Image (cartoon, rainbow, N blue to C red; front, side):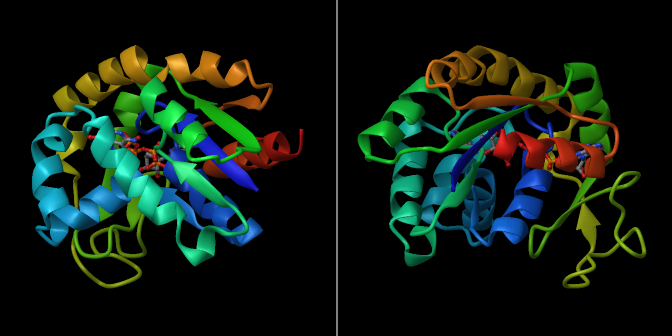
Length: 210
Ligand code: AP5
């Protein structure tokens, strides 16, 4: 299965990608995670992306398209993959088509902007391995350190309220048009994000089969 997860920042794409990845044994590919790892390692890509990411803007198309081209050429993508956070612009979707990749399903997770702002303020991430938690919905065992590696949890710089508002603006302007792009292919399914993660997961799995 080749799957795209669409949705506003904080709609729950990463959370759902984790579940589907385990269920279908296919890799979840998050351009955001790839860029954040490059940032942690101070690579050329990380340095190039930093100012865009920190201010809530999209990293230029040519940079992310190259990241995806390289990642999808890896052996573990042979039997399918989940794209979480790519494409995010119509030119990115067109580039994916030009790579000859035929997507089976596009799931759009819908959550109103007001709920997103509240969710993002509670998100905490591990500064070392990147694992993601939420102070109310998905707390780590002790609430302060990462369950996986023990590192202290921190708030993402781009989860500051004013940056979240800018990310939402960019989403409505540049990413939302992708809904029409994929609606035209008949592959789009809309999932209404629920209060509980498990309820959203149930709807997402249903949408995969519909
Ligand atoms: P990226 O990391 O992709 O950020 P995003 O799309 O803004 O998405 P998030 O990771 O913030 O949210 P999510 O939808 O995965 O939600 P999550 O599951 O974590 O990108 C960051 C930046 O990188 C971009 O701004 C851009 O600069 C750059 N970038 C990346 N890809 C790019 C591209 N293709 N082109 C250009 N630039 C690119 O959930 C959020 C929180 O809510 C969590 O705490 C979670 O626990 C909680 N939660 C989840 N589901 C529920 C639920 N049902 N109920 C309650 N809480 C929930």
